[in-house]
Image 1 (tube, rainbow, N blue to C red):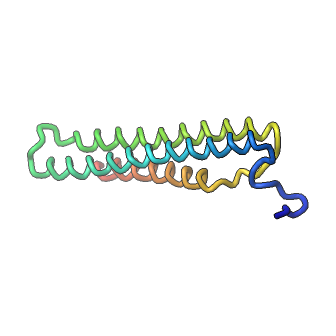
Image 2 (cartoon, rainbow, N blue to C red; image 1 turned 30 degrees about the vertical axis):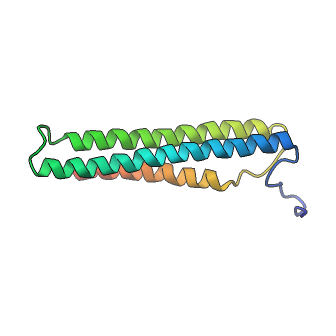
Length: 128
């Protein structure tokens, strides 16, 4: 399949560069899974401890917010670090040959990073 004139190919033509880009995709997917796990676990712990705090079972009722915020912040930071690492790798490959950066894993990672920020702000908002 040929590319229209003036457009960039989806992947480089050099097989070594293709393998590097695909390895960067897999690494970013691993960051995405780790981040999603931390975000969901942080929210679950927050809700569980919030219920325990309302029942009076916790000595410190502010602890659900702190634990939830910590895990959500770590998940969001993991996603941001993964995107930065991916971007650096792909930029290095683009120095050898131009190709499009419209990768679906990058779009999903950016959406997850935004969701992490939104979840973090929602937990803070509920405490106020």
